[in-house]
Length: 417
Ligand code: 5CA
Ligand code: ZN
Image 1 (cartoon, rainbow, N blue to C red):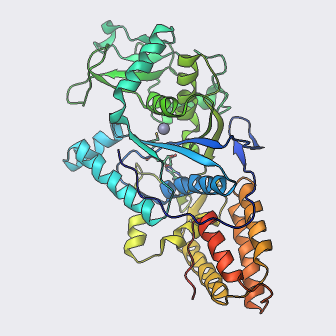
Image 2: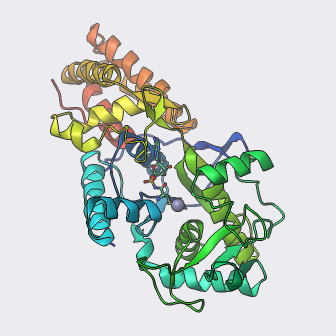
Image 3: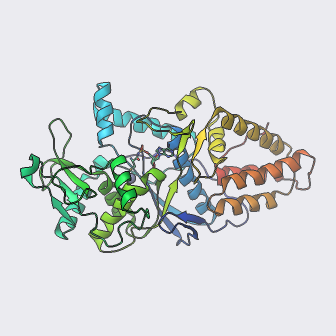
């Protein structure tokens, strides 16, 4: 599937700073210490009702990771999926009386347009689940052959679905760190089927669902059917990035069961571990304190803000005003604070000469490299802008230098006021 077009990322004079990130599996901020090529997989959208500000915040987080890595001299191999075969998508298509493929394509197009408007760096490989059915089949086959998966007895209800034995790897649970009770609750809440009759254990995860009447399906050794959710990302990432790739990313709602099982499937199938070196999760964006979600419908869409003439740089600044690991709500006040900040920066940049740009850029880099401390990064530029607006003109080219750094490192393009 085609990706979206990339914004130009200018290079910033001076040296980038090695990135430190919080790894969910470790529960700590660590040096990423990657090789020259960083391999990153980020879980993409299920294409209906996109793009809300929660999605935007998650993809902004990994865009910022990408930008700091480029600045530190790395190349990045970035893969993202779309979950274009899944129950919620079918349900929405049925509700609206449209074909699920038409809905998925239209929503993926909207998402691409929003990502471009937000100047989010695109993955080089943007992969739809429907494009990778053969890869999933191959991996389910491996899991069955290794004894890590089983089929439901057809006597139960006639559907001999394939399930993954959740304890197939002894390390299961290492990614989220959840205990049994937390796993049970999250599994039930986030797409699992603990009550499916015929499973060996409620936490066993669906790998291949045999076709039910009216459902889309593909041929397989286990009859017509379709993939489960976790195996999709597991297969797509493993095939393109190999094991022990650098960053598995997504929103914090994916820490369990999705990322736990994606990792476990690949580790069980390959006999190698870990799946990813870092599991990185963006916190949830809410509206009035409630998580923004397609199923609740409490959405602020990027498209709506764009239609209102809101500059996408303000969306970036508004989201970046909070730390990516802090759950936070979107509000009109946040948007207005972003606008005021943008205008101050813009007036300062228009001065041309200003306060020492090298010091401001060094502070910006240091804050961003420290687990994407965007509030600290924005403050560093606020300090520079305040000094400049108070008349410090000791650095002749300060305005242009700071503008370039903001474009490259924060993806925010400031036009001089
Ligand atoms: N297709 C799956 C991942 S394989 C999925 O979760 N799709 S999604 O459309 O529901 O979400 C897309 C991405 O946005 C995921 O990384 C998810 O964790 C993230 N996300 C969803 N809601 C929010 C929110 N309110 N705040 C922040 N991120 C969110
Ligand atoms: Zn995923």
